[in-house]
Amino acid sequence: MKRMMLISALLATLGLAACDRPAVVAVPVAPVAVPGPAGPQGATGSTGSTGSTGSTGSTGSTGSTGSTGSTGATGDTGYTGATGNTGATGEKGKTGDGTTVIVVPPEPAK
Image 1 (cartoon, rainbow, N blue to C red):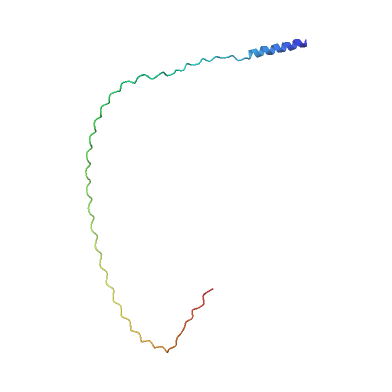
Image 2: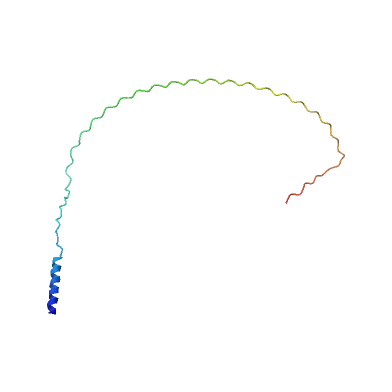
């Protein structure tokens, strides 16, 4: 009985595993076009005709000259100042008595 149950379990497992197998799908390969050798060169085409030259535009008119400005008025001449008085002449200084004075400079600040 134990073997029968074991064999039944194995058969059930194999039966279920066989159903679970994914199907293999073969994808067709698309043919790839391989370029062949180049053919002979064709004839050269004719050169196109040259277009016509456009007309030259007319010259613009010259602008008018502006008017000249007026001259400004001349200013008045200023007054001449008065001449000052000459100062008085000082008295003659006294002559020295022969004593020499020596001035000693102050000590520098610290």
